[in-house]
Image (cartoon, rainbow, N blue to C red):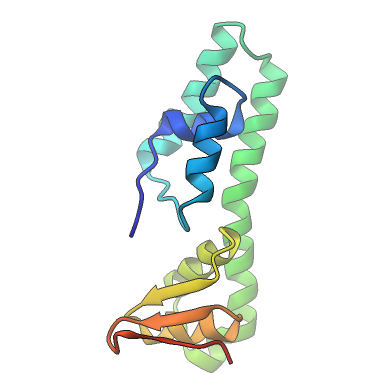
Length: 141
């Protein structure tokens, strides 16, 4: 099941505010949070609004924006490493690697897909995999 997280909840994860504890608790309960182009605009904009309202300093805003970008960068860095390790073996495409990397960075333990390449890479990295074409879990090796 995929859970959509509004930008207000994402901001509450990065900036301590009234709803930070429930937002952090809610995000810990989901294996992966979709991050859309809308989030790319809204989340940093919300940080800038907090600067304009004197809730945070420009330097705090800069540091939080860097953390957000670091989180996204970790997915791409992991995907690059997965490419080096597994592309030639499984003929994985870049998008396959990004899916697996996103799951790993989100500290997921199980990967669900119908894509054989993604499943092969996920399994090779130690994730338990569920191939929905076969409708059952395959255990880690």
